[in-house]
Each structure stands twice: as structure tokens, then as C-alpha cells.
Length: 264
Image (cartoon, rainbow, N blue to C red; front, side, top):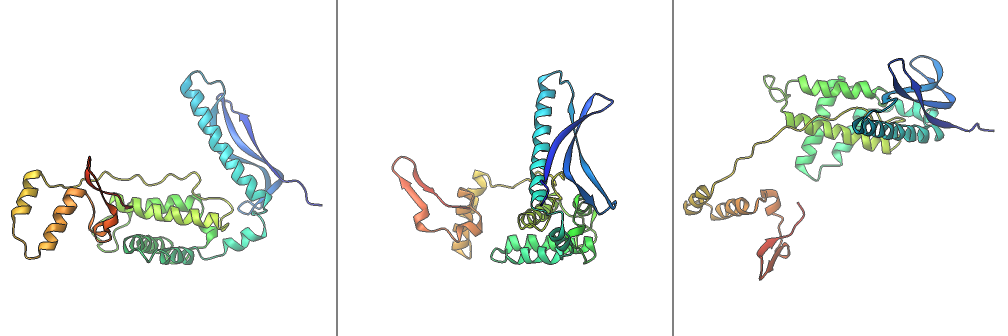
């Protein structure tokens, strides 16, 4: 008869007055790295033992909610025996091949596909062309983030990746990890405690009213190009959005005049 499996969230009072949160597994789980069984997994999440103000109380509430989220995830994996045979098989599968297949699914949108394939090329460089699911853990995810921060561009050995390129590439990596976790290829989400790459501030140029008037008065060899440029400046629509615009998306009312209703 199979034993009942459970994962409980427990607290341990530390000498400095804080509480350390940990998970209590029953029965014990086997840790391949140490070759031993254990019933405890310390989450490195701490609480104020006696919160003295609203800020500390709110900190405790958020920290405990995060710990409970981890506990629920672990319990589901534990009950489904994802720590056992199926997990060991998945650990041997090719992560790079999986990522490349995810990129190929985005080939209907050139911009999106280029971002995914660009991420793949840097993952391939980071892993030297070999990477299994078993190697993709929290340390790996942090390492890839640091790699993007330091690596020179594949297109130019003199330039580093821009802040927003790193942001875009790491988001594609995170999206793949999330999909793989939903496909049950990871027993534990390796990104659970890994922060993303912050997005950089962008500066967008725009035409003043005087400059736009000058464009209107300037002769252009291709009138349709001129009209498109003025239409884009007045509406804020990109070229890719304008070329797929249909008449039914152009709305009109006697009060507001003409306006555009479309999905970007």
C-alpha cells in the first residue's frame, strides 16, 4: 500500500529572533547531489518573529504567501511522484532542442521569431552547444542572466548587448522555462526565485507640429510613402499595423469624428 505523501510549511526560530520557513516532506525525499534523504528544505525565506509595525506585518504576509506558493507547487510534484522515475528521464532530454522547437513555432511573426532565435544562439553559446533539462536549475538561470550582461554581440565583437535586448532575450528564456514546466519537463520551476532582467528606459523621437507641416509641404517621389508617414505620425500606428488596417476598423461618430479601433 502506497504511503501518504505530504508537504508541510513549518517555521524554525533563529537565534537572531527571526523565523526561518522550511518545507517538511513525508516521507523523506532523495537528493541526488548529496546521495542522502531529507525531510527538510529550507526556503531562505524569513519572518519577523514579533512584527513591530505595519511594514513588518506586510513583509511577513508577502513572505508567507510566497512560501505557501512554493509549498503548493512542491506538494503537487511530490504527490505526482515527479521526483521519481519520470523526472530522471526528463533530466536527460535536450533543452536546447526544445528551445529551438519553441522558436520555430514563432515563425509566423518575423520580429518575434528573430528574438526567439537570437536567444537560442546565445543559449547555444552559453552552454557550448550541449544542455539537458537536468542542467537547467536556479544557478543556471542566474548564470545565463550574467552571461547576457557580459557577452559581446554576435554581430559585433566590439559591442555589448543593449539593456532592452538583454531584457527581450531573457524574457524569451523565461517563457520557454514556463512552457516546459507546464509540459511537466521540470519537477521544480528553476526560475521560481530568479528575478528577471529590468527593462531599460527608451527615448523615442517625435516630430513637432512645425516639422510635420514641413513634411506635408515637401514634395515626395512616392506620394503614398508621404501619406503613410503623416498618417503614422498623427495616429501613432507603426508601419506593420497600418498595412493590415481595414476599413471596418475606422470608426466614425458625429461627436468624436473619426477614430480607429484595432488590435495591435
